[in-house]
Image 1: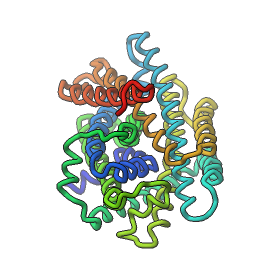
Image 2 (image 1 turned 135 degrees about the horizontal axis):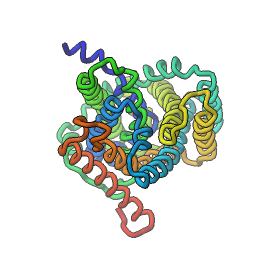
Image 3 (image 1 turned 30 degrees about the vertical axis):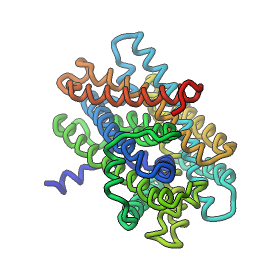
Image 4 (image 1 turned 90 degrees about the vertical axis):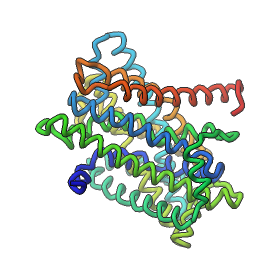
Length: 408
C-alpha cells in the first residue's frame, strides 16, 4: 500500500526540485555559517508553510481544473478580480525576475569553482543556453538530468550532516525556539523566500491536473495530492536543514565566514574530501540551470492564466514574457557585483512578495462557488492566515530596518 502511494509522488517533487536551487544552498549555507543553528526554526517554519500553501494550490487545481491565475480571473467581484490580477502579475514578474537573477548567478558561480573563467562570462553563456533550451523545446529532457544531479547533491548534504556529528541539543533548540540574532532578519526572509516560492503556487495548481486527470475521482486525487505534497516538501525541507547543519558544523564552530562558492564547498569535505569543490560546483550549476529554465516558464503560465491568454510556446505573448524574464535576469546577473549577495537578495524579494500571492490564494480557496465542499475549513484558514501574518510581519520589519526605523 505504501509503495503504491509513493508511486503517486510527482507534482510535489517538482515543487521541491524547484526550491532546492542555488538560493536555498546559498541562504542555508550563510544561515549556518553566520548564525550556527539559531535560524533552523525559519527552515522548519517555511517547510510547514510551504506544505500548507501548496496543498491549497493542488486542491484548487484538482477541484476547479484551473490554475491559480485562471481562478483569480474567475473571481465574481470585478474590483477584486482586477486588483488580484494587477498585484499578482506585479509580484510574479518582479519576484521571478529577481529569482531568475539568483538562479543564473548561482549556476554561474557553480561553474566558476571549476576553473578560472569569471562568473559574468558564465552568466552570459548560461542565459544563452537557457534561451536555446526553451526556444527549441529541449528543456524537458535536460531538466530531468539536472533534477537527478540536484537530488544527488541533496543526498551528499544529508550524509555530510550525519558525518559532521552536530550538537543534537543545539540543533533541536534552533529548530524549535525562534530567535533573531542581530543582523539575521534578511537571512530569515531569504530562507522563507527560497522555500515558499510564489511561482510554485501557480505551477502546482497546473501540474496536478496532468498527474490526476478528470477520470480520477476528485476525493482520491485530492488525498493522493496531499500525501505527495507532505512527503515531497518535507524531504526538501530536510535537505535544506542538512545544508544549514553542515555549514554550521564547518564554519560557525570554526569562526569562519562564507565569501564565495569555493568556501561554501568546504562543508562537503568531511564526506568528499578534495572532490568536494567539483561535486559542489556541478551540483550548484545543475540547481541554477534547472531553476533558470523553470522560472521564466512559470512566469509566462501565471501571467497568461491571469489575463486569459493562450499559454503555449506558439503564442507570441507567452513567448515574450519568458524571454523578458530570462533577458532581464541574465543582464542583472552579469552586472551584479556581489554574486552571493545577489542570490540572497533574490530570495528575500520573494519572501517580501509572498504575502501578496498567498493572500489571494486564501481568497480563492474559500469560494464555495468554485470549490464547494472542498473549500478551506476553519483549521486550514487559521494556518494559512498565520503563515501570511508571519511573512508580512517579517517583511514589515525588513522595510522598517531598511529605512532606519529599527535596527534588527
